[in-house]
Image (cartoon, rainbow, N blue to C red; front, side):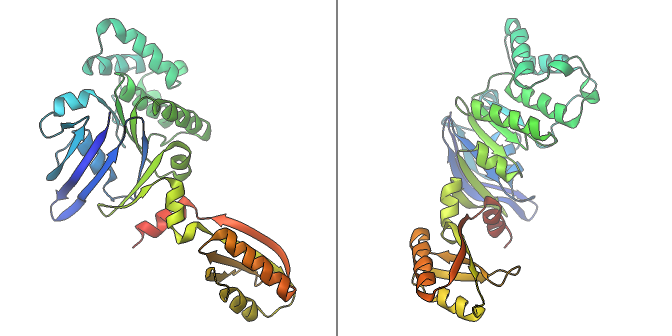
Length: 310
């Protein structure tokens, strides 16, 4: 089931938390929804899940507007909010059974769904404990289970791996990727390597506006030509002469001398392969010994920082 966000705006007092944003999520797509704290991520997700109403704009779920079909839309969505509100005095199985009834799961299928969720979310050893007795990581698993127990077509997950250890993160990541084959997923997280490992597409929001939308590969290509080349020269050559010689190359757009080693340079070029060839030919011509020439891809962290710090 697809999600279509159209000119969505949400205002708190005089502040626009979400400022006329539009984007689509296709069925079977996992969208990584990124942004710094206060960027408008959680507000957008709360509107999509019909938790709150926008000031203007619309969200259409499978062609149906949240403005007049919120009750039906809620049945199609599984939502794990950032703060993961749970009834701490309830045992895990009792709570999940309660949620299943709320979500309209048929009574004769509730037990089957409980077994499925316990297995999927790794709750076997903790299923008889009260939620208040669980670690943060296991509470997060319970939150994931309640979001999925009614087999929704759409999953909205706000920081789903918060509080999990590295092994648990890998397990939940695999689970989300598996779910993404059959469901539409919006995943918000601050763990950027997790986004690259899990998501088909990345959308970055800052100050209520969308500042990037694409695959991790396409975002890298847009950012400073996709990366730079790290080179190291052996010898006693004049570093100013090295710098000016590299800058004179046709394909080179930027040369950054390293602070750690005066014979190391980070060189940005319009075409990585052409730039590498020109550097190599220059070193041969000048009889410089080239000790290192390594292409360095722009990291998603660098792209995120560049887009959200202005």
